[in-house]
Length: 77
Image 1 (cartoon, rainbow, N blue to C red):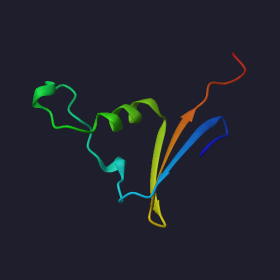
Image 2: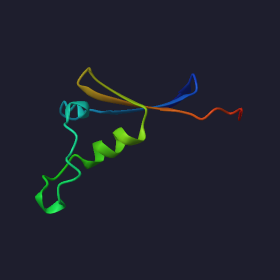
Image 3: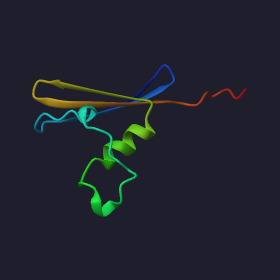
Image 4: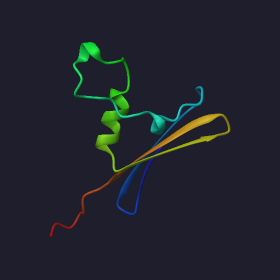
């Protein structure tokens, strides 16, 4: 589900998989060489860097992740 409200793009992703809150995942150590890192975690890291806010909730056996991005003003200064 995608909608714009108060100059903010909200993208809501819902699935019925096992409970998983990506916000509880620790940030990966991106300074360690690849061959010494555990697999996983970079996708969440990239999303965290690209959005202004992330929210997670579990409702009726569904994971709901909301990504929020503030849009640039339509009226340039």
